[in-house]
Image 1 (tube, rainbow, N blue to C red):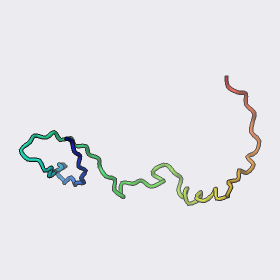
Image 2 (image 1 turned 180 degrees about the vertical axis):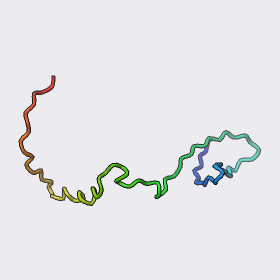
Image 3 (image 1 turned 30 degrees about the horizontal axis):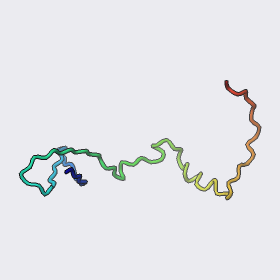
Image 4 (image 1 turned 90 degrees about the vertical axis):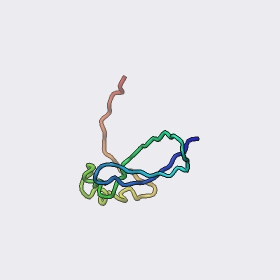
Length: 85
């Protein structure tokens, strides 16, 4: 019989995670597997500019395709190219 338990815990300043997990089993040997993942906090989230977007990009482009149906305006002339073989 294998069970899984998901918990949240805090690592102290000593860098050691202390866990107490009641499993309801007594006087038995157990094999324990621990997989950990740091949780992102709001202070770790990057701004759009830090992610490479120009300043105010989303404010300037939000709703720019609001036409229903979407209209594609003339794009000008493009050069004709030979197909690649």
